[in-house]
Image (cartoon, rainbow, N blue to C red):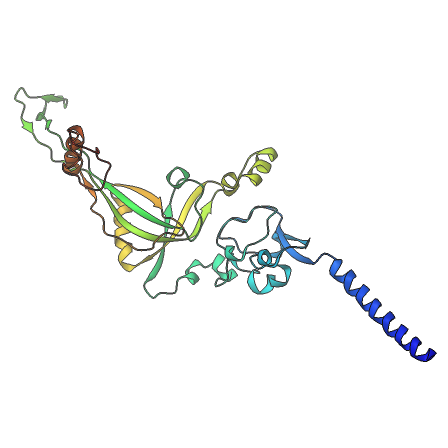
Length: 298
């Protein structure tokens, strides 16, 4: 009988020991190693281990971890890949910030990104005042072109040269009408994909550089040029825009439609019709496009 008690006691002791071990294990916080940026990493950069330090994090819920790249994911999902958006100092890398289809070679040979036989990329010089600082690779832009000025009549006198070579005006002046194209503004290119952005490196004092680390706008630097993906047909239109008239660049919504919709454009005659309709407070007057009109006519 005594032997039975000893066996039962030993079994109970083992059960208690196992229970105590499991309790201690489950009481310990779960930890995971996460790469954290040691400096601001601009969009379009190729990720390298030297850009990060590994931090041990405790009790991070699984849903959050599934959105991050952990140390265990690094080799497969991040190392040598290009970033879609800026990674700020002190932050982990979200999986959506990494383009897993690109390798480090794209940093030196951007044409590797182009897969279509009729795809090209065009380098477009830009200034920060044209687009601001909050634009990223893989954003899409539209291009508007404005041509011409308001036409007007000029009186141009004929000129003759005297014996000393000086220009003198004749007494008879001839009125001449100079033809100047009427203004036209038109949305001509839509959904142009930005492959890469060149920026000036932030400069200034150490205090300014530290401030830039907490301000994404300052951290990215001034815009210098865009690398735009175009097809063969777009090449000619874009060349025309760059060499004629005045261009306006606009940024499409990141989650917006990629559909290219025909537009009416605006001419001087359209504007005049709209102007007089508005002046007359005529809500049903001539409207060149869907603009704000008075709610009720006079």
